[in-house]
Length: 336
Ligand SMILES: [Fe+2]
Ligand SMILES: [Fe+2]
Image (tube, helix red, strand yellow):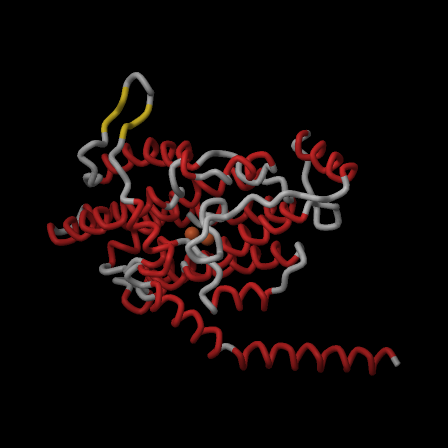
């Protein structure tokens, strides 16, 4: 998922450990009462150090996911099959860049800096969603990413609009609106392909086959293997459990697949009348952890592309700073 911070530590190979607070009981009680009343915590409010650290990790992982998430689809901008598809894809990839910027800004309100966060990403220490470490092999992948990856992201992110940390919750409102456009453009692109030639239909099915299980893994490990989720729930950061989100996503996606005319690659996928939900097969968690730990098919490529883009963009940042300095000096001169 975009925000796997409760399951995936930024320290390689380590699960996140719960941090015990040693702070003033009075401040702590006031903080707990605010959380219990479903109130918002704002940047100027006192908060336990563990809450602050968890949020920095979660929001920065989320921001990194948005930025790295631009890369797999960005590869298709120059190869989009029509001007219309190119314009839509450029807008979508640009939105993801915007999401990264809101989220870096939200994380900065917690006392971390953009440079620190980017250093973490570029040195390979910080994590981002493992879904972006898989290749986009054909044009249908762009549609399937919109439909399934953005679809899974929406499922995961809508509850974050009610996150207890104000700046994060507010950023998520706009992000979710844009994600919903991403999901629809992907699905619509696939609907068009499914009315096309046999080859086009086969491309869509092939892309669905490759992405389906990886999208289910985006929700993070099963609840039984996510011991830190409870603390996230207690703090009002995480609102719905990994397994519940995954189930909701599957239940919503099955009828969409039917309309589209594709098969979801899971022989165990079937409606369970008693549960009122779909049953589904086993997710390959060893493959998920392998990718999280740096050994997915595109981990190295994504990181080096990202670092190169950052280095190549240094002159833009330097020019912007020089321009701001010049403006400031002019204002001082005029005021004198
Ligand atoms: Fe996004
Ligand atoms: Fe998106």
